Image (cartoon, rainbow, N blue to C red; front, side, top):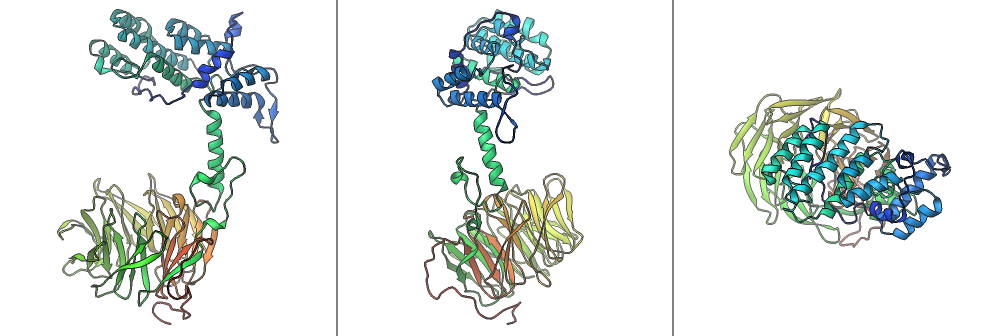
Length: 584
């Protein structure tokens, strides 16, 4: 059965009935007698009950009548009919007015003319709501006539009752067509579906509930909604929240501690022989790729205990490897030599599948399109190009598109390419719409990263600041993060944790910094490295695992304080010698 919107709005479809829908409304009728002594008794104004202004709670903002009615509705919706009825009787506060109960019963009994008449006795300030609700009721009447093959009765209802309401003309036309061709317009209770009249009428009540003011008809499961909202607000206000919500309880206010943040070194990985420049976890969180100025890249595998072990060391580049990029399915890895070639590797075997080169130019960045069949490269002549797996260049965007030292990202839908195009600007190139937008900064941009949901860009600046930009719709700056050190080198940051609620960054003072994304509060500075921390990466599936790469030639894996460490080989230690870009 069609829903109702305004005259110009499209018709909506009736929602599928879920178990227990409006059970409280229907069950609540058993405890109420209809005693319409006068028209005034039937008027469904917000219930005027003795003590209506009485409040409860220490803040004096909760009206007792509203609280009791909401609790009553919750009892009925949970199936506690006797308790709901007893609460109405003991409190003297009915869940619904007599006229509303009468309307509910008339709808369930299919008394359509009486339902419309009763609806008009409800004192609603917005007369358009009365029209919309009447349309729903009469539409139900229309369809039930058609189900009973009473075509002339249906036609009369359409002409003399529905059409004069003068709303939702498009839907009226659909109803007209359904007379000659029933398949043109259906509703959830029609005979060509598996529903029943009773189910359809209950769903009609659900639609009416959405239209009527909450003071007249309390929204379904209102108490549950309020409690969920309370827990979510507490969770969002908790700057350390970094676990799934299963542990939240109504018994106490929610507050996490610092023990939810990875702040303890669990492993030190020491397979690189020079500075480690770049890190990136695979999308499934099962692998970590690192690249180094020792001209190699390494694929590390995360085992079932959360420990990392070396899977493949990827050799072949003649220059330092500046970045890596995982294929959408994590089966392949791109490695980009610094102004050199790009190599594509098989993750299972470690075999080099292809080497991509461009005559006269070197590559400075790489990324994948979401289909896994095309790649995007930035070159040192400041252009961006698209290649297929076989090494054919498919497209090229020339001009000031990228810098010699640059990051590159492709959005999940494959439509936008992001790259640093000028010292203080990031290009957002919509390759399909051929539209260019820009993130403009007053200071030099050193690196950036794109959030998992593609809504935000995290930008590292020369001025020892990190800026968070919202790129959905109008581009705007939403947050700034300070505290880390950066004076000479490229330092990278990332978003991570549950719902990417945290910002982590490397720093030239050998520490890893972590901020709460929403508040901007610095919550951790992790010591352990003995050289500048160039890059950090947060595991996208294990919110308690963070990796950092340093000039001290090591990668540190950070976890929770209470994490158990299975020691293999020498004890975890600091190298003892401070390294800064290759110099001890």
